[in-house]
Length: 254
Length: 72
Image 1 (spheres, rainbow over the protein chains, first blue to last red):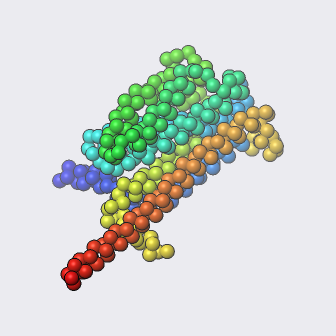
Image 2 (image 1 turned 30 degrees about the horizontal axis):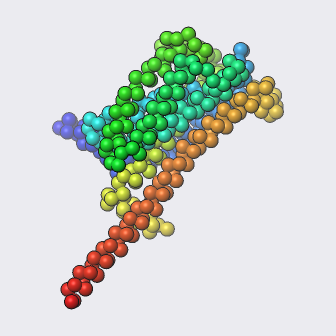
Image 3 (image 1 turned 90 degrees about the vertical axis):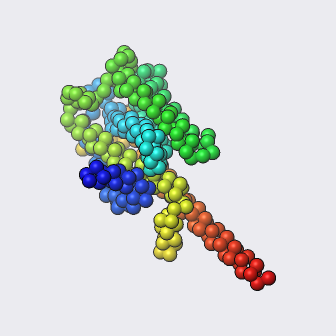
């Protein structure tokens, strides 16, 4: 009985209709949380946190650089796992999530690389260095772009989804390399500020706004992923009766 | 606030141009990540409306054909 209930829950979660209707209710709340956190973190980090003893005010770039990098990496896991779930259980929604996660991940990796380059100029004296961390992040960007591009290489959705999911899974090898790159190679990039084990290497006055920004970026990721997935659901399910009903109701409202 | 004036906040001891450009680029990209799916959704709604209308026109045409055939 219990097992049966669990499986209905699992299938409901995989239903595009269920996702579309539920997220309609979640979106205003999530957007509110996202905006509050990002505005608070931004003002705190830019105007109230003290400057770094060595790097001065340029260190404030950390408040977008680190959250964007953290979420870009976590987002890769999400994309790859969604692809794997699609491959194993053939759940339509998980492929839609994988598709939607790719452009967001690519954009966040782009933010991490660009803000890192801007930070590099006053700190290292160069915008770009072929350092292990930076190079592996560039590979992450190419992997995201690869998953996005594979969509257009097949005429059928199914084949394109499978190919993207496989590329996503193979590319997962890169993620631990990025995490560990600053420990494995003696490079220019500074070691991790936040560690899973042990205290952060930052004063709480600087660390707290960073935590707010990271949580804010996760909320942003959730909102953006939901928005992209809803558009993808409409694109793929346009023949479904509930989608047609939705569109006709919207027309009637006008 | 850490800075004494708004000018200091903008200038940031010479680092302002780096810090502000990094934040502005990030904000522009993030706003894009919100606006793009919303535009896509709007476009999909239009496409589906067109699809429904086409279906209705097709249905009407086949009904008319069937009616004409029964008369002749």
